[in-house]
Length: 161
Image (cartoon, rainbow, N blue to C red; front, side):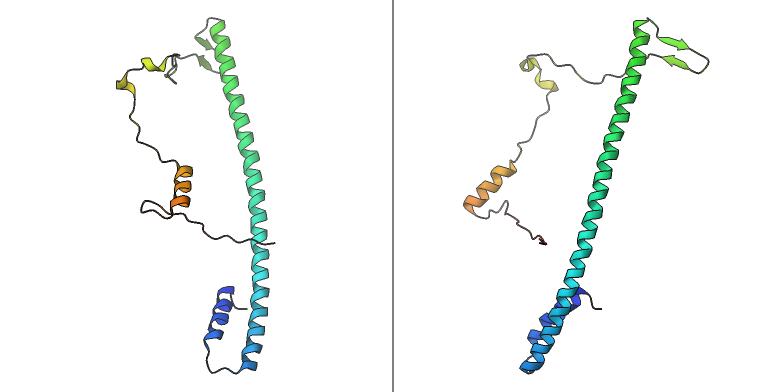
């Protein structure tokens, strides 16, 4: 069986044949149209199956990601539980038969900011370039038409009912 593209090209080429009688044209058109529609339906069915499988994969991915986060949080909680109890007991190091547990001073994780951020010196501030608001740009182009700095792209999409 021909591909959908080949059938579409055959349909297009049929209209370009000049010395074809009407009966032959209609018979060929009817055959090609029917074959094209059958192939289109099969391709659309295959697409729906792929989209269904993709949905299943996405759902499994969400569940695995949720499980991963839960396990990470449990590990983090257990690590903090152990270290906080060592510090409450006043122990920086615990030696056992199974291992050596040491409460080390960690790296600086973040800066704790005060309430008045106006007091932060300019030398620690990073200059930021102006940012374009895409929503406002879209509205501007809709109102004033295409611009040299941007146009709207509507694209195409397939809807199967």
